[in-house]
Length: 203
Image (cartoon, rainbow, N blue to C red; front, side, top):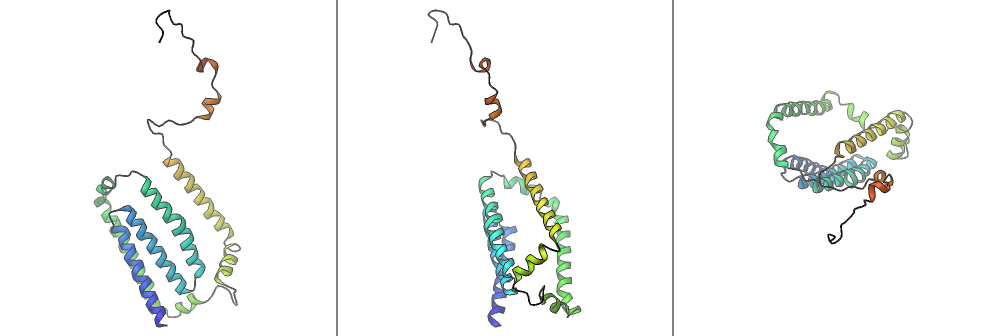
């Protein structure tokens, strides 16, 4: 029990510190690296809670795909971050308001354990009686009761991916691109030009 408590405080402290460094680091590459560290520690907290499937998803999906993709995108794009930070002060009031709302919600969640002491036992109770594992219970509930919502979430992600591709696809000057339709539709008149050169004036 002592080892679990120490592990919890270790993971929680590193996770909170990494989250602070994500938003306070000046280098965007360092921010993404701290984000990956926060994901790993959050996965450790899930393991301590007995949700090993969620911990595996967090590491495989977010660390192995999303965070690494963020890292490559930040390293490849030529973004002027100094220019982006110029309008930070005008968004400070709404950011402070959202932060206060989140703080109030966290205080309400923390106070619910004192107001309703039975909530802890209801939360720890497994999804099914005599269930095989967390993965089995999550799959059974996700693909039976929430099958349509699961498909709707997939469609929303697909639309978001198409929208991101459309927004980032732009033409740049000085870049030569291959156009298959123009190559196939070329005629002899477009490709060959007959030039009459006078005698003695050729190259």
